[in-house]
Length: 397
Image 1 (spheres, rainbow, N blue to C red):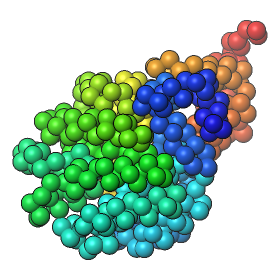
Image 2: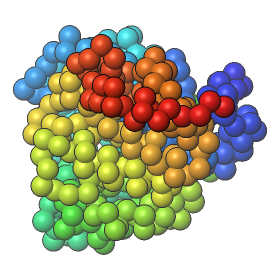
Image 3: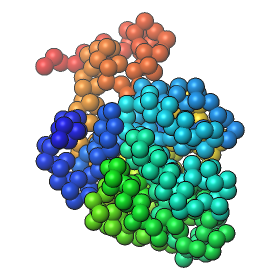
């Protein structure tokens, strides 16, 4: 109950609103040192992904990225490590993390088995349980991709761009069997129930380019996720739905509303979406454009995208830019949703600007370090005595 009260106070809502949302599946509680609520009627949350690659394995670097993500205002952290000792890396990151912490267990299962086609169901379940015992709060589970969707997806420009989804795809093709997570979802739910895990149902077939947006494969998997979400709710397991991906602007609102309808208003967790394919190096911007529109349309959770998306493993500075861009998108979307606490920040900023109150502006700014990093004695060195607020001061209340 203390967690509910903490979240309700942070959101500016009544605790009963949170409790009822959890009961009907429209809100999930992500536990951790600083728990947060994700779902209908709450602020849009931001997740930051960190983790090693096979080419770059440095726990020291990942700890710096973790610290930067927390400092920059991420609400949750996910470890996507695929290189090095994944268990050791995860545990060290969790020791330094005071936010809800998520993972993608299929990565560790694949690494432990050597190749995707050699993964066993027991390896997957043992990995999920190991990570849950470590205190992981939420996990991406790629249970929605089924064998009937593979031939459909192969017609795409990019059949599969989800790393976890590609592992499951390869396993199904090589072994000529159905997705083991789909067929054994009850076993996953049993572990989730035991450890109070929130399952984030992964969109293995999210579109990786505009040409594949809102296609039959994507929607087919979404229908599966809706069915799995209902099963999870009946089992008393909280669940989120992951969504695209790459979407043109005019597809975003329809995608969000479709996902909400199919999954009975389950919290929706989006990667971006990225609204164009031609901006490598600037995809924190393409995703922020899509994220703002998605948030306004009803998305509840945004996974940040860094400038190095499609280019390589992000560095510490990339993490900061990714978090800040996603926070701007979430805030803009929340204003459009009518969340008054968010709009009040903008009104306070307007007053502080009009009154040339630099300290208050810095306190309100999403990135105070950027605000104070300009070149004048006062943060703004643009107009000097020609400043509009010096020429025409605002009336005092």
